Length: 557
Ligand code: G6Q
Image 1 (spheres, rainbow, N blue to C red):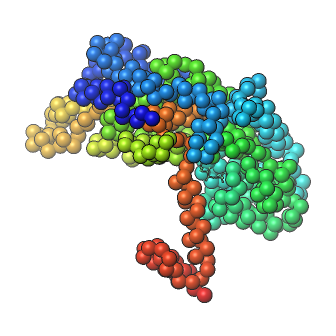
Image 2: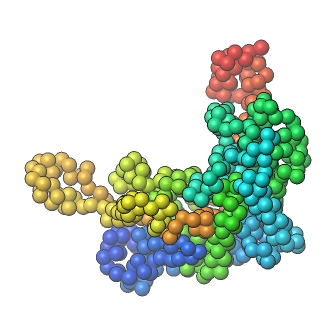
Image 3: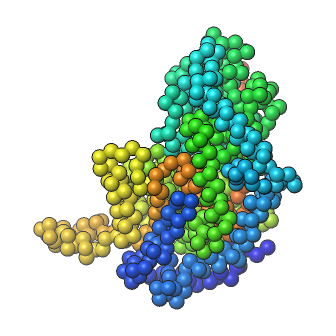
């Protein structure tokens, strides 16, 4: 195995970074009128302006072309072969001995994608058809609750990949939601989450979706049991559970053990990773919310991005470009944090979704062969919708000591046109990326203050505080409207970006042993907390905390 830092392109980028350190983004724009046209791309309805990044252009007179050097790194890292292996159903999740075939979930009916020699697409479409038929029945008011009333509320009980994706997508596509159906998501084992939802719904008209790939996740099963208990406290009886509880899982046995008829179960497969499962029947709540037709458009949008990723040359491949920029900042320019700033209120859960996608996939410290990684891997991803962020954490972006590459995401048209709201939203988005890039020099501050009649002493005292270094990079991603197809393409763009980063770092993006650890640890502590005895088997801090909780909760036997 060649370690990433031993690749010739890595060395070339190291040297290139040293040579370009003094070039600012403003200078690059001032010297190169063709920069915006050259450093942009469009595919599957997604347009990306990546010109406000620290990239030198050979075509604009630079000795070396940063993007070309980065593409060379992708070539040397076998990105294309690794991508093709993923699409072909190879074992790209080696520690769990599985393919990762979320692309098969959004492939058209006539596609042929094989796992162990068998085309999985017909089975994928059979489940998708069931999801669509069921959704239609609920939406049309044909699927009735135990007292004969149509369903009005859907509660998805799941966590992590079985929650964040559907929750994010139903929020993002809220303008297309069915009028009668209210969607609710319960994930936290904190009883307050479930209780607060149950206070708002009626057992006669509520459908629960228990969404769990493994159907063994403690939080989800605990919430599902309590929801069933609440349901049975009404006039409902055991036989009514079938009309009000459906399951989404790969584990038939555990589903029937829980008491859900497997006729009311929507399956998927172990080659679908949790954080990639939105496209499987885990998306049932999304289909219920926006309807089968739009749900299929959502899948088609993702498929369009899949085709672009699979077919476009590396140098004009959008997921590859975004990944290379992250590698550039993360590994060469010392920026280990990445901000996602959607200028779209409906995308308010998108940063949280991408946080899981990125940090669970690429939060790794060993290479695929198990040897220790010596370069930085996945960055810290975070975010909140703009413009709200501008009134809060953007201060650090403008004047803090950390440089944080940012993805601005904005639809050009609003789904809720209202006066000049959308122009103002766009103006804020574009103005922020410009200000981050341009900054404001001390001279400009001095001139401004002098014009305002401020004294020299005042100016000297304030000039440092009121100056902005600028030179802060960003991408701006636009779509025409954030409809189902655009959202599908946007999510797929980031999924593939994360995959390319992992290919370059030579890490395994499709496992999550750290998350598995959390699932195991809580089990032991839980059994000790409920045993009613003083605990002494842990470190002093953990013993102390547990004993305090046992005592203060009156659990000592
Ligand atoms: C995703 C993760 C994790 C998982 C949850 C829920 O990639 O593995 O977030 O989705 O732990 O797991 P279940 O769906 O099995 O309940």
